[in-house]
Length: 320
Image (cartoon, rainbow, N blue to C red; front, side, top):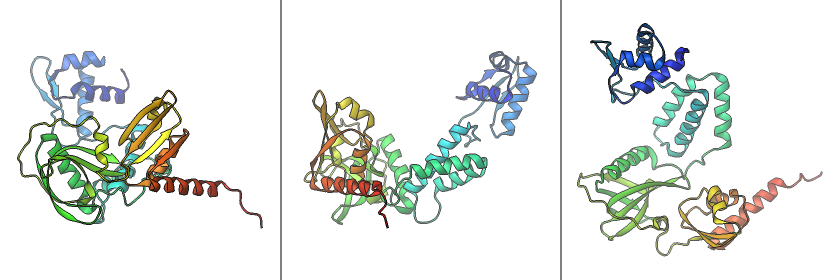
């Protein structure tokens, strides 16, 4: 491998994990002389990678973990994908108290990109825009709440928080967090509700005053039909009959929080407890396969409204 950029990427890969590697081994794997290896190591250090070396027969090198975030070497395609993702994160989870971490990271990345790549990023972001409002994770503290819930879930630590229900009532809740799920541009927490002795889902943007006392809990088996937990007892559930095989629908369906059950060789039924019927109507139409809405009335009405808007948008302009 003779190109310097390619060699440095390979060298980073070899040094990943913090395990010391001898200079002779690294030089042999890269196909370079010890002198060229030392020069490549210095280039990595100039870029901010804290490569440590040890003297001895042949010497050794290692890249310690946990020393901050070093500069990343991204291809053009990787840079575009990263920037678009950051734009969606900033739109979906930004707060109201100024730029958040996604905004500042995006600004730094875009400043370092060529103008031609900025145009590609703007076009991609505009074509796949995240709707503002519903996707926000709860204002200024939304990302912090998500981060703390994720940590509590990972270490199996009980949580306490104040929760505002759909009817506006608020109360203290205690639970064992199991999973965070993104559905219809909203974050949900799947948890065992200790006071109700049952599984519940909580919208993260309705969680306030999160506390993690530190008490841990043993793993608890989750029902196989956990997707159905996203609809509470008494809530209307969306029911759609697709006139297509379940396998074909599953490959195209983006509304994943639900169940898809075959009802024959060429049809299947999708059940979900999504709250945003307008969003669900769009997601179902995007599957691109024939279907019939079985209920509830809210989903049928949202589908009719979507069809009317699409028909009006495609209608030829009226002649003067």
